[in-house]
Each structure stands twice: as C-alpha cells, then as structure tokens.
Figure 1 (spheres, rainbow, N blue to C red):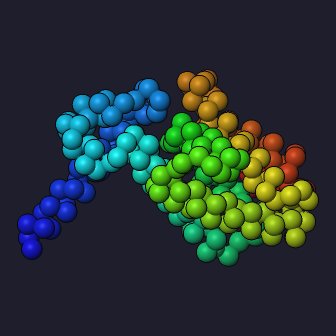
Figure 2: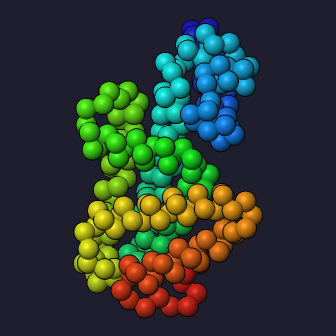
Length: 215
C-alpha cells in the first residue's frame, strides 16, 4: 500500500517538474521552437520518462492550457458569487483575465488560434486533452456572454451580438498583452489598464463611468 502511495507521489512530482520545465521553455524558445528532447534535458529526465507521462509536446501544452483555464474559471467563480452591479463584475473580469493573460500570453495565443481553426474546420484530429480544453473554454465563454447579456439588458453596454463583444474583449486583452511584452519596459501595466478601459468606456460601455471607478 505504502509503495503504491509513494509511486503515485513520484509520478505527480515528475509531472509537475515536466510541466514547469516545459512552461519555462515555451516562454524562452516558443512552443514551436521547443522539442521533447529540450524538455527532457531541461527537466533532468530522460526521454523515456517524458514519454511515460505525455504522448507528445502537444499533450504537454494541453495540460498547461488546462491549468490556465482552471485559473480563469476560478476568476469567474469568485466574481459571479459577489453581490455587485454587473458593470463592476465585468470590470473585475477584465482585470482578472488581464493578469492571467500577462503570465500566459504566448500559450493562450496559440490555443486561441488552434481553437478557431478547429471551430472552422471541425475535421482535424485533436487529442482528448485538447477536446477537453475546448469544452472548458466554451463554458468560460458562455459565462462571459451571460454577463454581457445581463449588462445589455440593463442598458450598460452597446447592443451588438454578445458573442461579438466577447470576441472583441478577448482579442483586445490578448493583443494588448502581446504589445506589453514586446515593448520590454516601454509600456507599464497600469498604462495598459488605462488604455483598455479607455477603449471600452468609449466604444462598449453606454453609461458614464465615474472618476475613480476605472483602474
């Protein structure tokens, strides 16, 4: 019994090290520039150990994305449980997503591209890992759309299709974060937040925003 417990703990530790090492390599070399051999060398394991845990690089990537989506889900869980005006909730969602996007911009950009390709073609083979991530992402998307619809019902945001607004918001955040990373110190996070809310207040929100309510 104890031997099985120790074995499970060792497997968990190995997977944690592999995922942490892969994440660091994806940030340094990019997803497409990283090989399974790179991951094995960087994590201190041989290739056999890596393949014992993950079928390929795509499965490792999908496991990392799964963790990110769990973080995003937690943001929605916390905010939706609050008793606050819908516009305040949407503002907090933007800030919560922004923090996660800043930490994971490159991987999320790849995932979004893969998600869009799958939605367009629906014929390409994808792994069970990726299928679950797509399902989880759709659940997150539906929660955002639900909040947007509520804001529209209350006359708080422009009356365009909520799917369009959700897509615009995601794209605005992701592209803004990519600019933040590319500027390498030329743009500060607080300036990015100011610009994002400036765009939203002038193009999406239909009611006056009081001074001090926007970060």
